[in-house]
Image (tube, rainbow, N blue to C red; front, side):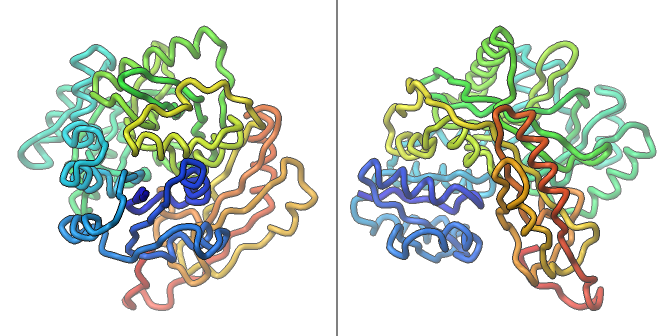
Length: 417
């Protein structure tokens, strides 16, 4: 019996392997580059799963490969980049999965915004233009006003997102966007002020369970760089129930009836406002944090939904565990990563701090304005998310990520940065 994972998030593979084993399934990882998962694979027995190197962007090639996989019962696609390829594969192979049209909608931030606007679940609609950037500029100023956010309809990791608070910033953002390669289309939407959170939910047949809310502490404006996350945020029970109901309405409006979702939202003076709906489990150490804080391997639900059956997590009485927090560690300046120092100090710090590397020595670090730039993650835990945040920040303050300048701006840099 085989369950295939079409690429994966950076962390969580070990939990996924243990979940597959517990459910009597064999996990197969399809990847373009196994070294991307080195941290996880090095901590697993060599025969813990099957790793197949293939071009995971080649839908036809992967289809042929999977048709020859004995006992194939399900497919997991947990990344933004491969969401639509995964949907196409499950459809072609007759495997359990959501309607590909629902996932196409979820990956189109402008379409989601407008669907929610029509359902009166957001105060602002998306602003798009079929013509030139000057036409988008005119439409934005007329329909939404400033401040606003200009971004990629299919972006990920806070890439290609601009906060524009006045017309000079709008002009600068549009000029910069004109030189970028987008995954989707450029659009604009109102800027909603307030603290940012991520709801970690699990749905099955239209019923949604809120597993908890992660805090999302961001860099100062105008950037949207993610820096600190903690789980679970301690909302009063009445507010938690209200959020769960609202999230169920949001997901139902999008047609997202099954599986994990990672819904980013802003808590404004008039209530929650969706930032985006991610049809997957949370990235970075969100999955790790949920496993520890809930006292349950949530990746069992990932496997179960891929098999087309109701996940036990929907009804489980969760034993609980420590609250968790993590800090994304960025270097001060771009360049080639030369090392990380300060990790030896973790032994003397509270919260059982740990270092989860994302980049390796020699990797280029070019982009510090979004999540492409962090070299690793500092994790810590405590009795509450607030205390865990304090401990994670204290540990992260001991860490320094070092880079050296690129040798020659005209010299081609290694891929992967």
